[in-house]
Image (cartoon, rainbow, N blue to C red; front, side, top):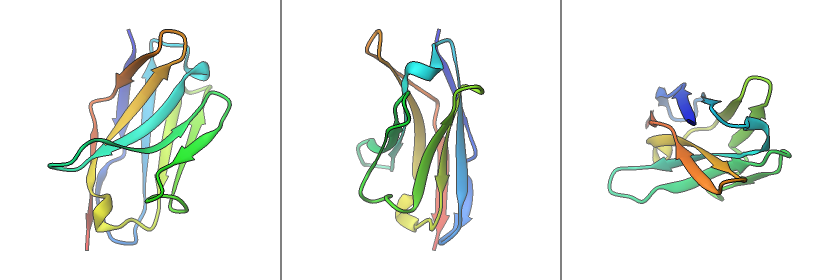
Length: 117
């Protein structure tokens, strides 16, 4: 049973930084693609960043140069370092694990990030 537990959200002023963490269990972490998505009120969930087991990363255009996704396979944890935060980054951020063997998606419970202007 895959479980994803996010932490690190909160309230920050525009221009500030936050680091989100997502600890995974119940799957072979190192081979799975991990990702961060976000969903603002009234909007669809959107991709923020993903990282493959081999370390290949992909970012939404809106966060390129400001956010960095990374993973620690020894700790079964994926991180999202967010800098130069903007009010439009305000959302609930969700951790995602894509199991490449079963092709199933798993989601964390979400963590709120609020950026004040």
